[in-house]
Image (cartoon, rainbow, N blue to C red):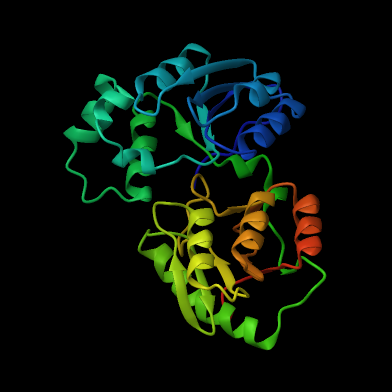
Length: 289
């Protein structure tokens, strides 16, 4: 268990911001609660224009630096920090990676100096959390401050799923849960109880588009779930309007997510868009529970 983000008017909270609207939502919510936000944005991913109005301080950092955010947080009196937004991982396989990210000495020691068993998401992120903790910086979940972002159980759109779609959800759910246990990805795309695509490093949207290329008849189901022992401090499954637009573009028909462990940004607008595009969104708990 981690300590919750402090209540209003106490110490500032640190935010490492990636891509998307989640960091902005968190920063705005913290500001409304009277909590100063010291934001360190990942260059090329975070939006300073959207974040800065809600932050007491804003710093840029490269994806290859650990020392900069740690020093920034300590300078501003931060003791607890969180991360929010998507952090693109495909850059790790860019040519001449070292010269693209220009890692600092602390990152070099962390990345190349440790004998990690693998470089899965959980392994890397838990290692980074431990690195910050060496300097007295404790990682918390952004959802401690905005739990309302987690979807509630039920059909979230007007159209319900058909019997065949429900069978595909049941089939895909078990597979997606196992992919999460293996820390491969969060989503699988299914039609007629056959797997069309499995999410890996490319992310959910690209996996959905790949499923669309392989299933030209459309009508497939997207199942997106949390890991069996999901750490709510990072990599929590997230959906939003972009997810719905991508499913529509690819020809998908249903999105099934896990209730209580999936973030939905701009839920009212997202579900209204899904209704307009004829896509069903259903949130449920583990099959059989």
